[in-house]
Image (cartoon, rainbow, N blue to C red; front, top):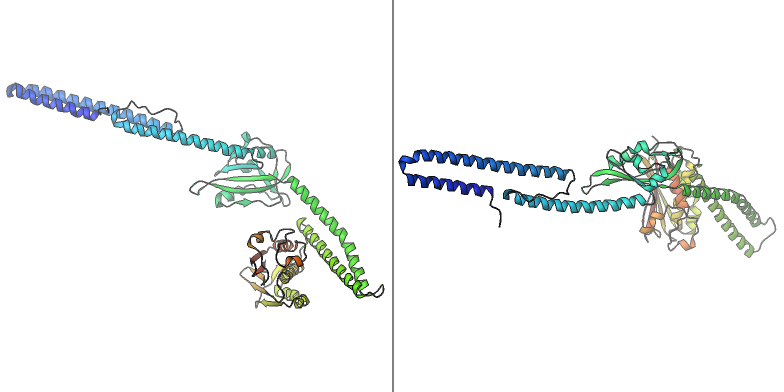
Length: 467
C-alpha cells in the first residue's frame, strides 16, 4: 500500500479539528461556546503551524538531500544509491534519480572499457602516436613515441607539445614547432614534408613521416588533434643506396652506349665496307635498341638528380607558344608516319612565364610524344596554349586509348606503365610522367589530367606568369 502523504494527513487532521469545533458548539450551546471556541481556534492554529513547520522541515531535508546527490553525480560519484526512505511526495523523484544513477553507472563503465581498449591499441600500435587537447597539451603518448623520443609518458602528459617535441626540416632547418595549431584552428589534416626529422632527448635527429588530423566530437566540433609519426631511417638509407646505385650505374653506362651509337653510325655509312640488306636491317634494329637504352639512362639520371636535389634550373622569361611550336616542328616526321594530325592553338598576347626553357621543352615533348604514342593511326592531337589570371597553361588533348579511372592515380609514379591496346607495341621506362610531374612542380607549376578510357586523354600543366 502507498504511503499517506503529509498533505493528506494535514487535510484529515484539519477536517477533524473543524468537526470537533462544530460538535462542541452544538453540544455546549451558545453561552459556553465562546471560551471553548477560542481555545479550539488557538489549538487548531497551533496545530496548523506545527504541521506547516514539520512539512517545511521535511521538504527542506529532502531537497538538501537531492542537492547533495546532484553534487555527487556532477563529481562522478555514482556509487551510493538513492535513499528510498523519503516522504511520499519525493518517492517518485527518488526512484527516477536512482534509475538515472544506475543507467549512468552502466554507460560510464561501458565508455571506460571502450576508452581502455582504444588506449591499449594506441599505446601498442607500431607507430608513434600522441594527441593534444585544444590547449595543445599532450593527453596521449604511446609506447613507440616514448621509445623514439626517449621520454616517458609520465613526463609529457599535460605539457604543451611544442615544448616537448621538436620537428625540423633536415635541409632548411625550418622548425615545425606549432604545426598542430593549424589542425586545431582549421580542422584540416596536415602532412609534414618528407625531409622532416624529430629531435630526441639525446639531441639525435631521426627522419620521420608525420601526419596530423583533428579530433572531432559527435557534433563535428574540434576537441583536439592526433599526430602519427613513423621512423623512416631504414627507408631513407635504402633510398639513398638505391639512388646512388642508379646514379653511378647510369653514369657508367652513358659512355659505352654513346660509343655503340657512334660505331653503328659508322657501319651504316659503310666505313668498314659495304653491307647487304639483311646486315643493314639488323644494324638498324641495333641502333633502335641502343637509342632506347640511352633514353632509359637519361631518364634514370634525371630522376637521380631530382631526388638528390642536384637538378639545376635556369629560370628566365619563357614564351610557351614558341616552345610548343618548336616541339611541334620537331615531331613533323613522326606525325606523318602515323598519318596523324597535330594541331596547335596559341592565345593572342600570351604572357611570359618564369621557367627553365630546356626543362619546359622536355615537359612539352614528353606530353606530346605520349599523345602520339597512345593515339591510333589517323588520330588527332590538339595542343593549346592559354592563360588565366596567374598562370599559363599548355593542354595536350588526344582521341586515343584513354586511361582507366582506377589507374590514373598511379600514372605519375615511378616505373608506372598502364596496360592498354597500344602498350604492347610501345616501349618505355615508366619514368617519363614521373619526371614531368617533378619538373613542373620544381618550377612552381601544377600538372593536371582528364581521361576517359577508349575516348582519349587531356594532359595539362601550368607555370606562373612573370610578375
